[in-house]
Image (tube, rainbow, N blue to C red; front, side, top):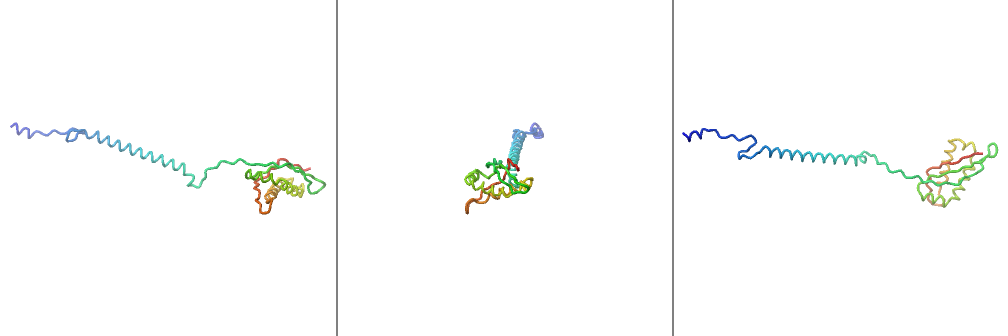
Length: 176
């Protein structure tokens, strides 16, 4: 009977987490799961960081926006004051004016200095053709500044380059 009792005895049920050969399977599967989740999290974080970098550095170029360029320092050249007779209205009037020209670059300053007698001659003719009432208002001064720019932009020589004057600033303006 001893032989039949062993046959009828139930086999030992393996413990939870142990495989048929007795090793612990649950801790290994949890460790693998943890490693996979950690790798996926690192890949997602790297992808998010890369996407953020791309959109922050290239996003402005794709939307048509340009990064502002640093402003160039303005370049000015100061002209000596002019004193001219104005066209008579109710007697003799004089204009004493000092001005500063804003130019594109240093080469334009050099060009204007080279041809300064021609610049001054053109401006004396222009200024002496005006009446005091024409240039005493703000609109008159603005129109005069535009005319000065037009006079100086004319080439100094045949087929010569035109000076690039961007603005005229009156630093003194006296009609007497």
